[in-house]
Every structure is written in C-alpha cells, then in structure tokens.
Length: 579
Image (tube, rainbow, N blue to C red; front, side, top):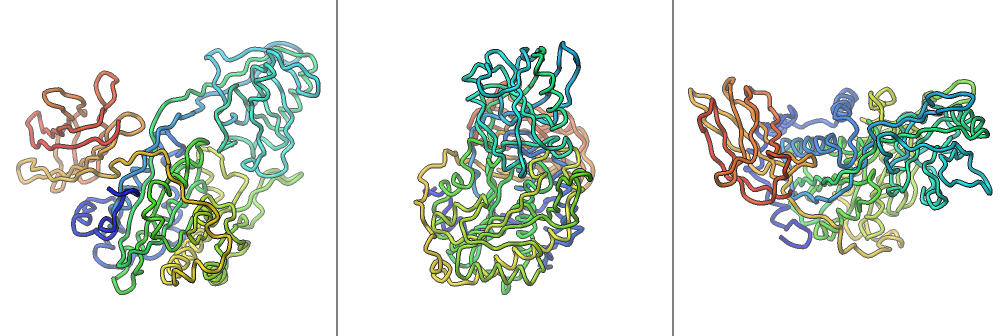
C-alpha cells in the first residue's frame, strides 16, 4: 500500500471480479449497466425516489446507526453499479445525540412547561433530573452564578450561518445552563441542528422561538426556579468515508466528492448525485467514456465539529490528489426557497433557493457558465474559487475546482418527513445533468490549461496527516453456498465493525426459499456471535452479528459458519479490519 492507499494498478484494475461481486446488487439499474444499456441521467421521478430512499434512513449524522446504514447502502450501490471500492478512511469520533430535552418553570406567576424548538448542538447533557436554578435574563453586570441564563439572540440570516456563541464564556461566569431566545418563529427553528460545526460545549443549552423567549424574559424579572433537561449522551464510535473508482485509460483523475452526513433531503443529497452519475458514466460504452479515471469520494464529518472533512480525505489519498486534473464538489440540489414573511408566516416564495457555483478561473469557469445557460438554471451565481463549498480545499491545494452550494433556511432541520415537501425534483434533475456536463468537460480539457488561469490556485500545501485508519470498505467477500436439493445461498461479509459494534452479513437465496438458516462468527473453538434463525429468499436480508457478553470484536481472523437446521453448510475464513 502506498502513501495514499491506492496504487496505479488499483485505479485501473476493475474487472470481472468486481462485476461478479455486484451480481446480487440491489440496483435494477446495475443490470442495465452490465447489459451495456446506457443508464440515463435521472429524471425528476428518479430523483424523488432516490432522495426518498436516503431520507428513509433517518438523520444521517456522524456516529448514528442511520449514517452507518446509509454508508453501507452507498457501498452496495457503487459495487452493484460496477465500480471498485478502495479502503475506507475510518475515524474515531465521540457521538453526541440528543434524545430528550425540556424546560419547565417550577414556581412564580406562570409555572409550567415551555415549548422548546431545539437543542444547542454538542452542548453538555444534564443529569436525568436536569439542572435547577433561577431563571435570569442576561445583561451587563448580571450575575450568572448558579443561574439558567436567558440570552436574547437577534438573528436575521439563516440559522446555519449564525453566528452562534461559544458557551464557555457563560460557564466561566458560573451559569448552570443557557436558553437562547432567537428572533425566529417556532416553525423555522424546530428541529434545527446548529451550530453544525461547533465544538463540544461545557454546559447544556436549549433554543426557544421569539414568542416563548418574550414570555421567559418577562418571567425572568421575578427569578422563578426552572428545570432544564437535556438527555444527550456522548458515545465513542467510528465513522468512515466511502470511495469508489471508475477506471479510465489515463493515470489522470477527476474527483467527484461530497460529504455523507446530513439531516434531510437537501443536506446532503450530493451523495445521491454521486450514485446517479456513477450509474450513468459506468454504463457508457467504451467509445463514449472519458479517458480519465473518475473517483467518487464521499467523506464524513461536516456535521461533526471535530473531524477533518475533505482535508482528511485529501491527506489519506495524496497519490490520487497528485494525479487529479480537477475536482467537482456537489451539494444541496433541488432546494426551494422558504422564508418567514411578516403576516404570512414561514412559507415558500415559489422560487428555487439561490445557488452559488465557485470555480477556478479559466476553462472551468467557461464550462460552468455554459452549463448554467444550457440547463436554464435560474438563480445560479458563478463566483471565483475558492468560494464556500466544502470542497474548496481542493482549489487551495492546487486542484482546479468546481463547487456548488445552496443555503436554504431549512438546511439543517431534523424532521419526520426529511423536508421532502420542499424538494424541487425537476430542478435537482437539471442540476445533476449540469454536473454531468461539467465532469465531461473537465475530463477532456487540457490539464495545463485547467491550471493556468488562476493565480490563487494552490495557495496552501497538501496536508500530511488526516488522522484516519485504512480499513476494508464494502463487502470483504461474496460466496455461494450449496444449501442442498438444488438450492443455493449467496452471502456477503463486510469486513469492518460498525459503529454499533456489529458485523454485517447479507444473505439471499438464488433458486428458491431456504428455511432455518443461521450464521456464526467463530475464532478457534470459541463462538463469538450467532444470528437468529432466518428464512432466506431472493430479497437480500441484512444480518447483524453482535458479540456475546456485550463485548467488542477485535481485529483479526475469524471463521464464518453457515448452517441450515443446525447442519454446517459452509466454513469460510474472514478478516475483520477494525474493532
């Protein structure tokens, strides 16, 4: 393994083995690809279905099981499409997850529960019974010792922009907790996940809307006793990148990237665009393919506050970055504009959310402007790189870059419907087609020409360390088991331990239903995990093997044992790469 974790041979080595590994893939489009039918760029209906699939996982936040499952799905889609997965970059991470929050006035003129819109991200959790103290409105000269401070927060822009303060200043003054009274409606505030890149905080904090805030400020004059509760435990866990390669004939590379973590349909649907673009470009006949290799990089940490994000991916894959002629970062497609209007409430304006495209000056800018006109992308503004895209680091480190981003008011909202009512699927389809054209243009433009038109390109050195560990990504192995009577089982084993401590195995029956199947992981004579009995059919079943006794799997070699009605059908060596 070289310094970046993938060699020239790795990039160009996809072949029959990878196609076989995807034979039981879940994507119907993969079959079309293997039959050499061109998979079209997504229609509005395809966009809506794919985004709904993503949203159905739930909030995909770092360290959440939902995020891990989404990354599993991404791996399966890339493999089923015919791409080659390279090792994941895995990071240790302290997951923060709010389970319950509440604010209650215990005495005074108006005791009772207060409607709370959301919690302050990564603020410290309280004991189960909460923290109790006098409600005090903050101001010049006010003592915060032992108090629950009400802080008036005037905010005219989107919530994700802030600015949000660090809570250490209030902890230093002795405050037990903080309540931010934000000048926004409850509808806009509810479920908001801000500040999304902030640090872990030393005291708990909640957020209320302007009406609840006004009531609290009025009550605070009498200093009533309040109880603030925030059940938000920290848990050590693991998060990973997913990187897939569509080999070309050239050593040169175009990187297409985004982050995997997000709250709803818009944050982050760039991953869905990566899958849709991979389906299309892989299905093209050889004569229509780009000579340059396409690398689809989906990395974690934008919602984490402590992870290196794209800089970490760059550090882990320096050999790819050094061969890259361009990078394209895709974010926030299909966003409609929603604002709060006096007298009308929080509602749609009927327009799409403004979209900013930052480009390295020169041929990349010309490609982007041409694409905006071709696809009739209204409200799309082109600015000089680096811009504000999460992938702007590529430009700073010398890789010509195109990045696109929108910033709707609901960008970070966690909600039951994933904000799907705010999706413009037709717009997202046009934006995806636009990015396909940009990738084609960058794939054919001269490398020196792409680098020659922007004096700000390469203003920073490449990073030397990203803090990750390379581990097996995707299925570590796929094999067919003879189940007797002309029946066969197909199993895939994933060679990494998930953030919830389990190892994933998928099981499907090829010829007909196979009943009473169990799967075990053994080490020597010791049984480490066993599944419940299951009935297998052609639908792929996910089996999560968990170690006995609430222990964790350790790295190393294990034996996977497949049984039917207690009889051993197969023994297969597997290696777990992380634990």
